[in-house]
Length: 191
Image (spheres, rainbow, N blue to C red):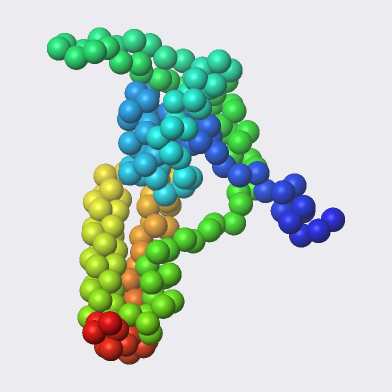
């Protein structure tokens, strides 16, 4: 068996379905709230989930009796569907979590730009680096605020892990920024 075939058998990718079950584990939510958690909330760091994938996953989970929903009326607004996890859904999530997760994949447009620093203007590279530093500092501040509000050990672990990654990246960039700033070509600004 080739390495790639073995990986397919060893790892089961986490999917939007599992992500929805995980979000609903903690509290009931509307489809919009699930989308928000998956795209920019605390669950956005785990699995890529497009807006177009959440509702089909919720429909399938409902069909499989892993999730139920109820209609909630709102004064002056249209009613909304509020989803909650069933006991069968809790069991399905636990079963899915027993699969060995795939290795993490790091994708970074910042790294891609840095790869070509010697072909870019130094002023531009300095701006890109400063912007990334500001983003990391903002992310760290947000995670520190979140850490102060959670008492769930798994959440504290995940937030702490994220903080460690951001701090390591921030330290690396600050300590080595000269490598890509020095490689940037000031002549590129004239072209």
